Length: 132
Image (cartoon, rainbow, N blue to C red):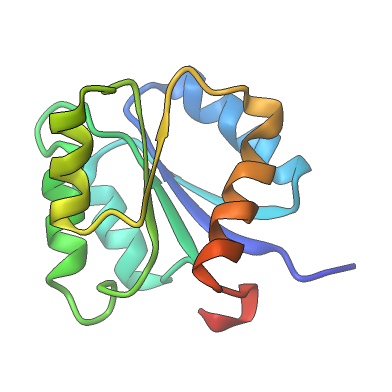
């Protein structure tokens, strides 16, 4: 069996996290979940994934703050971060890229295709599962 790609998914909606985990596991990912910013930062530093899917809108520490922290830490600064959010305004997208997002996926997303989308974006970045 091929090596599973480690992925960290960060979202404050437990139902969404459960569905995303299910579909990403089917697509061959090794999934770790976080439902808030501080937990995401801790998990990313403790066991850096190959990629992070990060929601923007979360209570307390929002996704852009998490992204900024990730980009300013030598342990996590090179991990690709794909924003996975319902925010679709150009200003929101530009702000995420300015902070250091690697890509942007808008909700709603067809969850059955999310694994293929993430793999295609990783391939575009030339990131292999063994690089992390």
